[in-house]
Length: 151
Image 1 (cartoon, rainbow, N blue to C red):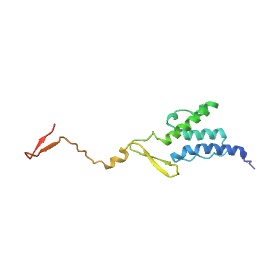
Image 2: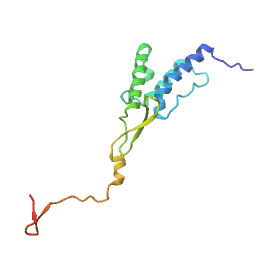
Image 3: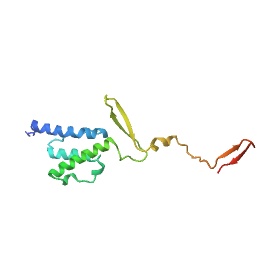
């Protein structure tokens, strides 16, 4: 009969703490922090969560998390989480022709939406297919009843 390893309760608390730390960063991107995999170690889970958050941190996409060790990893993780939160509050990585909605809450807890992107993403639907431009302006000379050219 195979024995299954169950982590001690203290380790489970550390896994929950890591997931709780990543959840508010991933939620604005409509993502949930993934649960730990079976037999996954705490360090592996931490790096996997940081890798998920790194996808939304535009200034840290090129960094290899698996090369960072010790205090360098801790500092890099902190900066990645901050950069992803900054991107969640005010998106900068928006494709052309798209608006991104960011839901915020006022002091009394009521939600309100802010939209980020170019105005043309929604205003283009109101533009005519052909654009007409004014070539010249004519003024009516009231005394003579005829048009005079201005300019």
